[in-house]
Amino acid sequence: MSWNLASRLEADDFQLKRGLAEMLRGGVIMDVTDAGQARIAEAAGAVAVMALERIPADIRRDGGVARMSDPALIQSIQQAVSIPVMAKCRIGHFAEAQILQALAVDFIDESEVLTPADEEHHIHKWDFSIPFVCGATDLGEALRRIGEGAALIRTKGEAGSGNIVEAVRHLRRIHTQMRELTQLDPGQLMSRAKTLGAPYELVCYVAEQGELPVPNFSAGGVATPADAALVRQLGAEAVFVGSGIFRSEDPAERAAAIVRAATHFDDPAVLAEVSHGLKGAMPGLELGELPDAQRLAKRGW
Ligand SMILES: O=C(CO)[C@H](O)[C@H](O)COP(=O)(O)O
Image 1 (cartoon, rainbow, N blue to C red):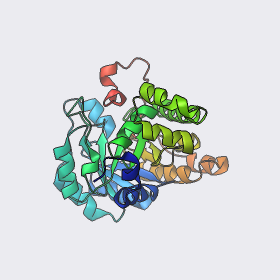
Image 2: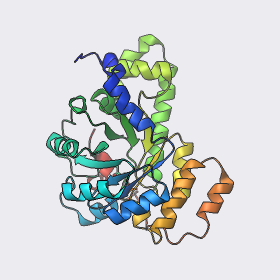
Image 3: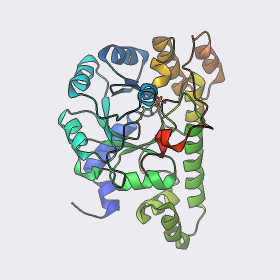
Image 4: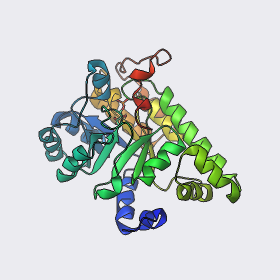
């Protein structure tokens, strides 16, 4: 295989992975912890589910080490639904990723929601035939993950918080940084690659195209239909939702409402209709006083 990044991104196998990510555009990917929840998600119109043992709010509450889910759980969810099934491995835990690949999940999420296994290295994702999704809080982090082979980026937000503020921060930051790149002279791009800590070829790509070479979704803290509409209007091409659905008082209704909101994100009349009469949203966390050690978005680099 060529080590040239541009030719790797253009290769058929990467194009296929990216195409799978593009098929999820406009939709909602829901965290589910059992087959019953997966069926609720599918019936509500989710484009994919993320199989995991605990939703992020419960991982946050329980503390301790959070690892890849039991394969039996993942397989029971694969059998329950016909939509794509994603599953998470720990950052840098390539052996968990190998297991998920053997289970033929549709996407592997190298996720900060689980406890990192390696604080220095993320997985070399080019080694895998299954596409990876990775989180990012800024453009440099997004381009580093793509440089390692990620076919889909999601802004991290602050998973399990029920608070949209970090998702908004990360989306705005990435879009601002991409716009800035398009204004630079070619002679300024190497210097910018250095400050971003990002591969030069990918910095040049964004400067020319004004966008990432893979889709960018949003995750972390979506709790209401309006939250989903907000991140879509800020440029997220699809939305991951976990705790906001299954920690609310009305998971099935809320799931369907969030799907409609993600689709009709720029139609306030539809947003008013789907927001009407829902029961209680998940309780949210005020993040201002949350110490860094409890911030999942700080995991990875
Ligand atoms: O973990 C995820 C991505 O890796 C989740 O899909 C997402 O971040 C869920 O966050 P929340 O529970 O706040 O909706």
